[in-house]
Length: 307
Ligand SMILES: O=C(O)CCC(=O)C(=O)O
Ligand SMILES: [Fe+2]
Image 1 (spheres, rainbow, N blue to C red):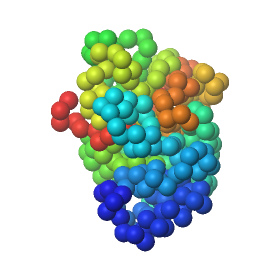
Image 2 (spheres, rainbow, N blue to C red):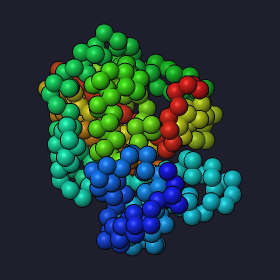
Image 3 (spheres, protein in one colour):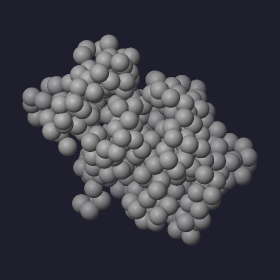
Image 4 (spheres, protein in one colour):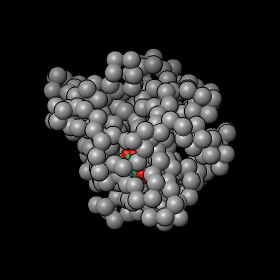
């Protein structure tokens, strides 16, 4: 749905919400609760861009100034928009508890730069256990995209094993996908298939960016499917005895795995560029094992069919 198609009274309401400093996530939250469909998000995004004048509202609310929409002039601008993350917003929670109907999700930590939010109680204990059991028989050694050749390579950088589930693969997967959409206000269609990863003792994922370097030839194929990655949600499926934190070395942050918690980070920085402060890794598991589920979000709809 486009902004121009919205009813005038809804536009008026959104303008007032923006003037009060409400961010896109809050506006979406209110609309979803009022019964609007998630597909309204594009119109909301356009509306907020139109009503956010200059930096003042954007800075106050955490909404990204939408340079792409305002300066829709040349092919180059369009290409830059594709890759720079500017159409994605930072997520800065304005409440401490998100009642998502099926789950009461708590906000435990929020950081603006890099944009990191830790959620408690995102998944229930039994959902975590069920995801692990679904994944266990399907695990294969994890690979990373080779940015030069585009091949998916094995290596010491990432020594976990994993598997992924197509959208709506099971009722549990479908309900987690829908919950993530309600929490983050990002349509399900922009999510990559949920991956479950298993790290045995000693296994790790060395520091890396989740976004793809658009300059590299080997990344063109992954970028063609849904555009740039703009955010990551890591869901912890078990408690780890020692080690296995998600580490952000540039800001000296370690997030310890805690069953049911979700760690979201968005790669858009305050200037609407990809944020290199989001360098992160899975530090080696020292004792025990680590299970996580990961949902990566794209700038556009993620299309599996033309892979
Ligand atoms: O294992 C972790 O905590 C982080 C995983 C990660 O960075 C990834 O899968 O991209
Ligand atoms: Fe990552």
